[in-house]
Image (cartoon, helix red, strand yellow):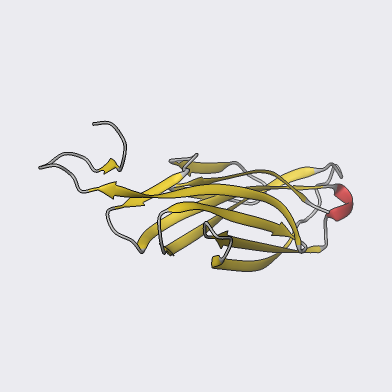
Length: 148
């Protein structure tokens, strides 16, 4: 079964199958706002799917689920991917960049993206939603409890 070699969140990403990928703001692990529910306009989920030569030329089911702090589903996406083999018949990693638009986080807390391949969970990517204090006269917003 294909495995997930790497997975992370970014502000933006672009991936072309079989080529390099580009990332802006990679390693994103928290989002924040002064009020909840919080609607975040855009995230990119970058996934490196490791495929053996024997798993090429077959369709694989992918599912991405965003879980809230209580383990309830907030958002999800599904799709199918057929990985084509290389001429040298070697195993390889295919990078996917999945755009996640307008996700609403109901409350602050620890969220996670659950990544499933062919119905089996292969990885989770954590994401913390934090409540930011109102900015003080022109200053940047501060995470509640963070020193000034």
